[in-house]
Length: 218
Ligand SMILES: Nc1ncnc2c1ncn2[C@@H]1O[C@H](COP(=O)(O)OP(=O)(O)O)[C@@H](O)[C@H]1O
Ligand SMILES: [Mg+2]
Image 1 (cartoon, rainbow, N blue to C red):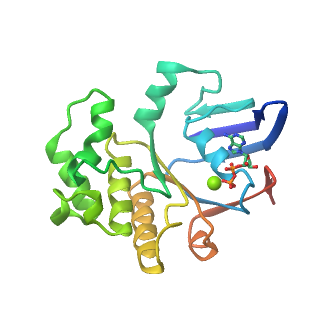
Image 2 (cartoon, rainbow, N blue to C red):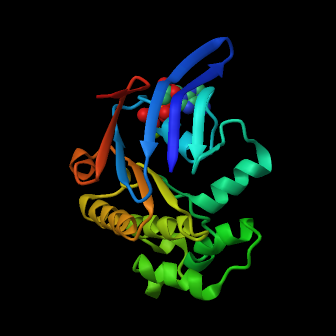
């Protein structure tokens, strides 16, 4: 479903070059549940951003269902990102002035498709927040906020959910809840890729990729 070949990412800061990814070859199959682990600065977020078409590699190939996307820009890339990919971040990034319902419906607005009320409610229900649908983010716990973010990631019915340290700001109990939710998504056929520092959770995914200094460690 996603293929990376010799993917490199170089960040330029003034005259300085930072080689964040140094030749990544990776195949991700439909429905896989994958964890990415490794020390801070290893390139985990850079890799996830390239997988999610949030960023492009400096060199190498990225294929989505056989289509090369590494040279795509603008509307073409936006379209793939919107239709195929849902993102979840450590910091939740909910809109503080919007209700749970409106936060989940937000991607529908950006994709210019009318928000189907039943669909949004079913997502809110699926993450266990039916009784909180009119609440504001400030009225929720961290675990609940992350559940809203997961529902939002599913609003455009993506094929793949990418989560960058989704439990990084949560206690053990809420981490377990979020992990179970991601696990249930993979059982429903979503492809799920999760960056984590939690080795115990990583060990419970289908496959773990260890990054170190911009390379996959075997
Ligand atoms: N936008 C950026 N500009 C410059 N350097 C960056 C940028 N993003 C990440 N880096 C650098 O790239 C390396 C890998 O970062 P990152 O992918 O965030 O690693 P991880 O998620 O594993 O901590 C780090 O040295 C980081 O400082
Ligand atoms: Mg990171």
